Length: 325
Ligand code: HEC
Ligand SMILES: [Cu+2]
Image 1 (tube, rainbow, N blue to C red):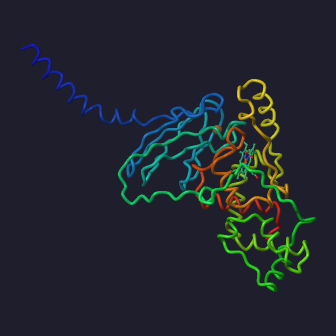
Image 2 (cartoon, rainbow, N blue to C red; image 1 turned 45 degrees about the horizontal axis):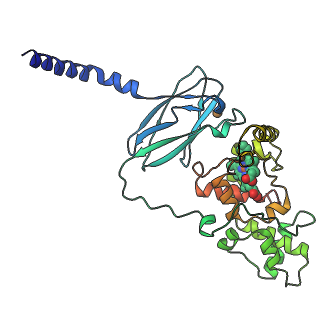
Image 3 (tube, rainbow, N blue to C red; image 1 turned 180 degrees about the vertical axis):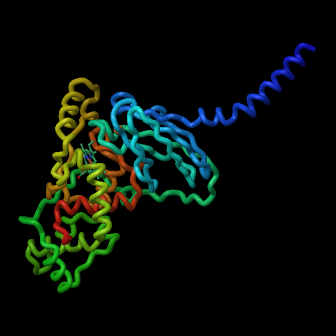
């Protein structure tokens, strides 16, 4: 008897809590995401669950300095995450998958380590299996040295290259562009009667003809926001964090086991002609997607779309070739 009574009471209690408690329960379920600089823990929690087709509500706040919040490969404006303030946002995921969210403000040397994931479940049948990135299908060893053995004396002239390419009916298809380094194309023209300078001019024109002003503008903006702090505004590898990276590298050499693998190298100088003219777009894609593996070069594969990465790459070559504005 007593048992049954207890049970019925329980049921009533559950029912009452059910009615009154639901809105409260939902309210408290909206997770508060705390942002802290990476060395102090980054995002907490850093794994969030969501369901495709259902809005995801999040509350964002910072426990230290100003941060920013955005989800990779999604068309969204970055949201400021401020100390002492809670910002509400709603995200909608159409497709299931693992998404990366990340900090969009340069809050410190380890800023780019401020990343977390949103695991979106759901059954969406029109999902196409992703095709492997170009550097994988080309089977490139992206860690092999790739320096050009000949570089131009001055900056190649795109406009001169254009008329030379027209006169000699030289063009470069987009597939060839993606898989060739400027040096390889330069070298491929060696049996012509053209001078070395003319051949570099043609290469500069062919590189420009494989991008668009829009792509370059987009690449420039992505670069300024995500890369310049290490690689430098003008690509020279002298961003505000470059010295810190070197210092971290020395410190890690002294303290970490397997130090060689853990070394933070200095950011690559994109104005270095031998390096950049010897690199194919596909190789640069691999480096950007994968990152530097134990160096200070972050991996960007989950942050940018494929198109954004090609725009960034087109922009990186503009440190070699002066494209007409
Ligand atoms: C935190 C500092 C840092 C940031 C931010 C950073 N890089 Fe790097 N990057 C490095 C370091 C260090 C290296 C050298 C290590 C290596 O080559 O693996 C490097 C190497 C590279 C290389 C390899 C070049 C080559 O010829 O091997 C490319 C390409 C590159 N970065 C592109 C980018 C792009 C594009 C961005 C922005 C989306 C970016 N990096 C942001 C530190 C950074
Ligand atoms: Cu941050």
